[in-house]
Image (cartoon, rainbow, N blue to C red; front, side):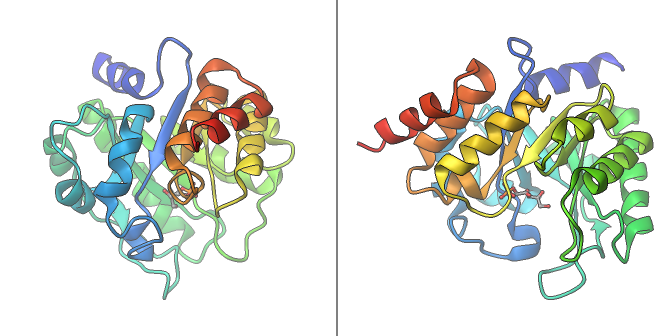
Length: 260
Ligand code: 5RP
């Protein structure tokens, strides 16, 4: 791995703990104005001090994020479909030059293993890895799950391992039972979990705790933070598990206390 690639990864995965809390706010690229993100800037501003990186599209960053913000950017560079159509029909929407202009610390696309456009999305990832290797920009592959896909360790291990074999530098997937098998399938490539649909806070913290215990490097969480009734308390609680090894009860206490 070249120096620039290593440097960018260590801006995201903090060398002090070897872990990371990414905040995902890229949902609009296929969902439009997702609950909590209609005014993305207002939602994100108080959370930035607690996030290690922000996963976002180029349009959202230019509209809502202050260029003086010190947060490392994981730039969502795939899209081209919507919730109204076949989700796996993605293309690359942002070229590497624009990612460099934005000063992205990483670029990201989704891979739909088993989806109708599986091959095309793997092709998207392989092209991004080629570009990323050329310019020292790591690629985060997201194992997106089509409506009909099971979210078990067998499927997520298959999808994640394919991303690793194609050359992804980090993998984002979903938490499942036997998650350690998914992490093992990824070898040395860091694995982070998406939060998925909004859960009660205590359940989202349990999921975070188990993912970390099973070997995840961190989270790339969206709705379970910004749709919480206390988003700042929730991201602080998630951080406490990821970076400080706190228990679920301790983390939940952080979330509750900051509500008062
Ligand atoms: C969609 C994504 C989203 O960024 C991510 O899944 C959203 O995070 P969350 O599920 O925690 O709201 O990558 O493919």
